[in-house]
Image 1: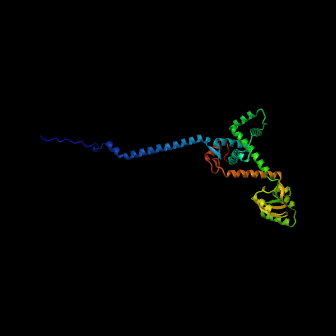
Image 2: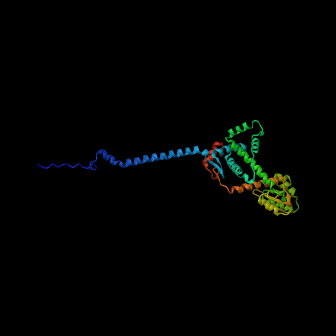
Image 3: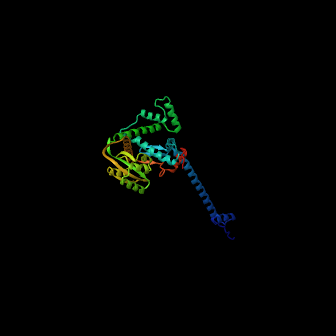
Length: 337
């Protein structure tokens, strides 16, 4: 009896391909490419969605984020925005180009005073602060409506009472420290008595010097030629000025002259003809010069403190955060042009 040959099954991977299988095999790379494209689209949508979500989160968090930090004191973006709106009322313009730099200067000074005034042994009492607030509100401190008016003001400008009182505290401290520096100004200082003629160019100034050297009267030439109306009306007389009041370059020229000497000096936009009429090593300091010298001493003190502390200003128009500045512009209703 002949042997029956048993057919050995072919492995599944060796089965002949059907028409569908062959089609799938032929389109396999297309399927992979399509799947990859779908994955890329999904990933892109995810990235875009995350970006929108991140922007939304940033927008929600921005008001409470840092706006300005001076040493250990901070203002949030929202706090800064409220102060910007208040500054608009004080200045009378909503121009962001003007408001933001002015406010930065004011806030840095204010935060410095609140932290370092005690170094000058100066403080502000609650009564002095209330007096300053009353003056700002246009009422007396003992007005029966003081508290109600203050709360109305706080509601209107979005500040807390502590923030509002800090504004007045800084104002009181500045007045006291400046007065203290004025009190330290010597009663008498080296001084010169001088007069000037201000003209537009060097050629005109040289012509006037030539006339003066020939005997022309200084006061008459000042009245006729000075483009500075105030000094022209006074015959060029500027009076006594104490050392330290004028800018350094002008002071160096004037204090180098002897009485009767005449010279010219080029300023930024004009040329001056100067004559010193008197000099003194110890002339009594006038009230106006005392104010100038005391104010300069105060500014020098602030400048010295600024060199030794850290400031982080997100509202600096050159180096700050554009998104935060934009928030202030929009929410304080500032004009961007």
